[in-house]
Amino acid sequence: MKIIVCVKHVPDTAASIKLAGDAGFEDGEIKFVANPYDEYGVEEAVSLTEKNGGEVVILTVGKASAAATIRGAMAMGAHRAILVKTEGQFLDSTLTAKALKAAIEQDGTPDMIFTGKGSVDTESFQTQYRLAKAFGMPVVNEVTSLTVDGAKAVAERETGGGEKQVIEMGLPCVVGATKGLNEPRYPKFPDIMKAKKKEIKEMNLADLGIDEAGAVVIEKLEPVPERSGAKMLEGSVDEQVTELVRILREDEKVL
Image (cartoon, rainbow, N blue to C red; front, side, top):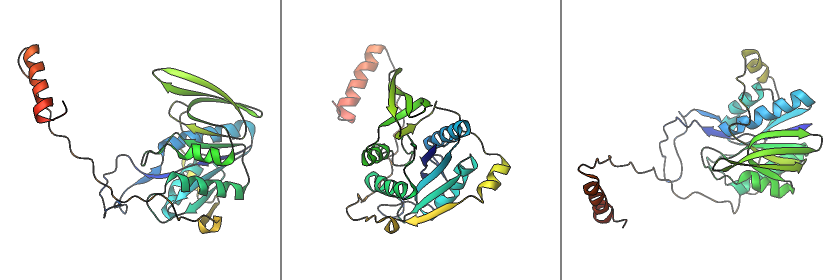
């Protein structure tokens, strides 16, 4: 079984982001990590190949510095990796899906493709669907349980409100992993050292015949406005409700 896991190189969610110019941010001192949801995909892929045999290939579209994140994913048990290098901080989901598809086709179509349910930086939640569409593969997102039996996969996914949905599909397919699917392992020191010797094949968009013309470009980034301090209402319930309505009508202008 050959499994591709798409892993995105993202800023740590605890990092303090400072804007640089109109459409970028200072990334020189920021800690970057593997997108947390993608790690569930890595763990599931590695677990499947440990049981059934096969190969796990990490695939990343990002800057050259993403190699560090890739090494971390390989320390979890992936066998090799592909890095499609780009220069920009942001790559729209359509172009990302095209790059992923081209790299996968060049490497050979796998039995399964894992992604995270979405990335914690741009949160577009579109790449896995665009990739599946490009390949004509079935896709299911937000998967919390997965069983693979031969050429069939049965996935359980969250649908909101405590409800779950069970979907059966044939392989090859695209699976968007999320919290609850497994518990990603912490690589041990020997695994980290072994990962340093594993292959990372590097290429760029031009090598894949991908033209960036027509891609979505971010024109302006703005920090989230700071929230004003909370105001405690006093008096009886009727007095508090009256004051709240006044604030919403006169101060906030939302009524």
